[in-house]
Structure formats: structure tokens, C-alpha cells
Amino acid sequence: MNAYKQICGLDPSSEFVELSAEVFGILSDPTRIKIILALRKANELSVNALAELVEKKPAAVSQHLARLRMARMASTRQEGTKVLYRLTNEHVVNLVAEAVKQAEHSVANGHTPSHHHRAQA
Image (cartoon, rainbow, N blue to C red; front, top):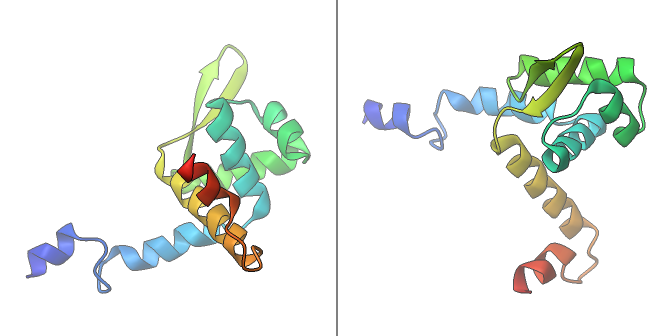
């Protein structure tokens, strides 16, 4: 039974529960969510390109990217003198996408959110 808990991170007593809370903490900043959504669309971007897309100063975006890198949600690639940022895997995009969908439900006022309409098309 102990081996099952090591394999299944979805068990309430899993060692990953606390780390999962830290993931949500990292994602609790709107600028980081915007960065993740921008990287989802573009795949790789420089700090300056991201700063323009999320309408923040490059220094601020750089700080947010540092947090995402420390959490292993983003990584970098050097291209000449430019550093390009990308998401490490698709899981962070899935988390943000689900959070956005939940947010749509919270303001739907009894209507079906748009993401349900797209799913039916």
C-alpha cells in the first residue's frame, strides 16, 4: 500500500500535495499567468517581447521569469546574445487554461461559458 502512495500523487497523503500548493502560489500572480499564456502561443520569446505582450517593464518580467524558472516551469535557450524563454512542459499551460475556464464559470451568471460552446463546435 505504501508503494501505491509513492506512485499515485493524487492520494490526499501524497508527498506532492505541499509541492502542488507551491505551484498554485507561483501561479497566483496575474503577470505570470499572462507570461504563460504568451509563451503558450509563441513557444519561445525574449524578455523584451514578453514585456511588450504583457504590458510590463522588462525588469519586472525578468523577475517573474526567474520565479518560473526556479519552479522549473520555464527554461531558457541562448540564441546569439539573446535569451529566449519557453515553457518546460505542457502541464503549466493546462493548469492555467483550467483556471481561466473556472474563472469564466464564476462570471457566467447562469449562462454557459464560451469554452463549452467551442468544445461543441
